[in-house]
Length: 114
Image (tube, rainbow, N blue to C red; front, side, top):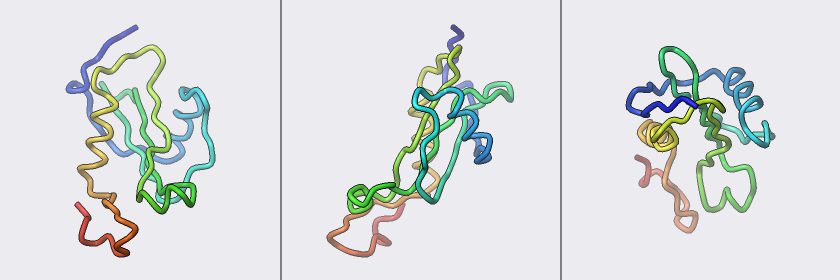
């Protein structure tokens, strides 16, 4: 098994069809029905896609009352270990500002956006 430090990888957006195919191949549960508002990011090393994280709007009513975003699926190639890879993908998503902190008791979330 090859080990790569996350600092030696690059995070880039991944096309939906490519991210779905990657998840279908490398995730234990395969691909389920995702929520809306999909955003997919991948970790690349030497232009090779090594990991994919897909974020979406929450898929259930209960989750929608509590959160604005859900980590839908994350998968890594089976023959590669990326130290810090999951953290790098999640931090990148958070840095894009594509999500909001939400307090459903207060209604609007515009004051919480990052």
